[in-house]
Every structure is written in C-alpha cells, then in structure tokens.
Image (cartoon, rainbow, N blue to C red; front, side):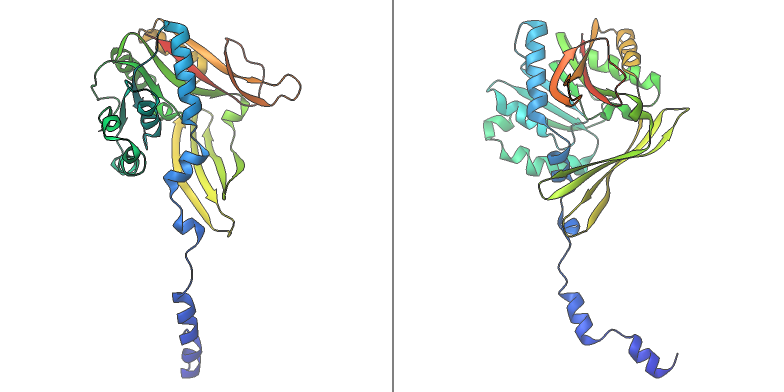
Length: 287
C-alpha cells in the first residue's frame, strides 16, 4: 500500500468525532427483563386464575404460594401485594435474574410486604421450603426437564411441598404448530416481540426456541432469551402427575370464539380439543 493509500484509509478527524457522538441504539439501551415482563408475562391474569380456581376446588382462599422458575419474581411480588396475609417464595437458580427482580420488583414493596416475600437462589429439584397452598411453574419453564424420570422427580417434590389440599399450577400448549419451526411476531408499545421456534427434533421432541426484540430505529436484540425444551403432551403430563401421587390433574384449555376461531381470555376444564394449530392451557394438579 502506498503512503497516499494509507492516508486515505485512515479515518478523518471528522469521522472520528462523528463516531464518538453516535447515539446508542434502542437495542443497546433496552432492558431484556423489562421487555420480557411486558411481552410475555401477564401476572395479574394468571394470579386471578389461581385465586378463582383454588377457591372453586377447595372452598377456601389461597394464602401461601411458591413460584418455581420465578425469574424476576414479578408474580410473587404481585401475590404479596394482593392480600395482607399472602406470603410468597420465589425459587430460581439464576442469580442475575433474581438480582434484577430484587432491584426492580421487590424493591417497590412496603417493608411489611417485603417480609412476606422470600427469594431463594436454588434448584427446584433440590430446594426445601415450608409447605404452601399453591405452587406455580409457568411460562413452560418446567419443560426444561427432558427426561421422564426428572419430570416425575420434580412433580413428586412439588407434591411434598404442598399442604393437604394444595394445588400445583402448570401451563401447557399443544397443536400441530408445537412441532414446527416458525416465527410469531407481535407489535407492542415501542418494540416488536418475535418468538422463534428455531429447531425441532421429531425423534426426541426437543424444541429450541429464541425470543428476539426489534425496535423502531431498526436495531435488534437477537436471542435475548433462548430455551431448549421437550414438547410434552398434556395427557402424558397427567399420567406422570398421577404417578407422582397427585389425586387429580385437570386440563383447562383456552376457549375459542365459535365464529372467528379467535382465542379468548377464558379457560374451561375439558378433556377434549379440536384440531387446533395451537392451543394454550393450564394443568391444575390437586395434591
């Protein structure tokens, strides 16, 4: 390279100054945990479902709850805010996400409320806690367990952690789209949420998924979250829960509008589902 070419290849002072003044992108400024809470979680609805279903099945109001795979513990925080005698235990082995939840969620609690919240950095397969009325494992986190033996062990441990009339709440989904690679996009306030089912192994039912976020300035937060799950069938999970000792495991499937086939924010106890491409539901397992 000649001297002249070397000089031309060097960035000018103006270019350097412009680069120094470059504003960070929306993706660079984004908080992935805050985006997750806004796009994925609906704690108010889920806690309403727990409250209503528990009261219907037991005749009393649930007071104590354990949130397994609690992440930012937003559900546990909202649980202790619901009633003055509610207590919650959040369990997760990820110190980073627990720390975020402590700083951004638990910190908003009043001192008396904070005393009724316990956050544990532990493995749900090993943790020992006081017996509670309710254990919830939502956002399909328990699908992280890919071996039947491990799932059975987890269910046995949760059953032992429940009071005599306690209930385990799980979420579940089904339909042909569970077994396909695909992307689902939703526009939210200030960003776009993308759910990607990136790889599926039809022999093992192993599903690799990612969550991406896109922003109005064209910047992207790719693979903000990644998961490797086994797609478990609802009937299969019922059978494992029965083997673990639960007296009953009820499927609550999301209802669909009869005319439009649009999913509704209503769930019914049923053992049937039409050939929907995708359906969401809950499994409610009574101790």
